[in-house]
Each structure stands twice: as structure tokens, then as C-alpha cells.
Length: 144
Image (cartoon, rainbow, N blue to C red; front, side, top):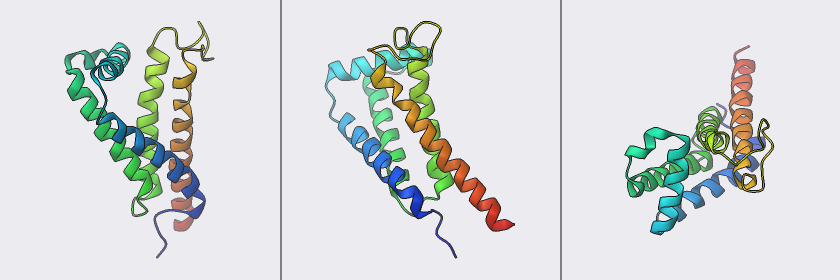
């Protein structure tokens, strides 16, 4: 029986998983200013989050990042599931970039100076899509 992952996936899974896990753990001790800033940016992009108290939002975001990071780092998690988790998480972050005024040039996806740190979230989308597609293709080849 083959493991639910390929060795070629591990550099992306380890680097991305460690980064996201660290980000989630760091948010557990964020100060009020950081909490308010993250909540404000997220609520600006996703208005339904305005109803979620900032401290609760940050706890949920932290837990989500820890879960996604752990999903990528644990070898028992199949690549397709890890890719799907990363694709969803990265997609949510990319949505903040796309929906926040001033993050990208008018009529373009090209980031402004302020948007450059958020534009990196498209790498997460790309890595998640790559892991998911490759896992699905490999599964199909094994069945054939």
C-alpha cells in the first residue's frame, strides 16, 4: 500500500505548513491593536465578520491557521486533503487582497506597495491547487 502523499510534495508542505502554523500560534498572543487591525481588514473584505467580536475572530483565525498548518505537516493527511485545505485558506486570504481598496492598482491585479505583503497569498492558492490536482491525477493513474 502506498502512502497518501508523494515525496515531491514535502518541500511545499513543510515550508508552507510551518509558516502557517507559526502564524496561527503567534496570533494567540496578539495585542488589542493587532486584533482590531486584522478584524477590521477581514470585516472590510467579508462584511459578515463585522458581527463577530474582534477577540473571537482572532481566536478562530488562529485556530484555523493552526489546523491548516498541522494538516500540511502531518504525513498521515492525504495530499488531496492538505491541498484542499491550503487552497481554501489561501483563497480566503486572496479574497481579502482583492476586496480591500488600495491593495492593487485600479483595474489590475498588480499590487500597490501596501498590497505587496498580501499578494503573496496567491502563492498559497497556487500551491494548494498544485497539491490537489497532482493528488487527483495520481489517484486516477493508480486506478487505471
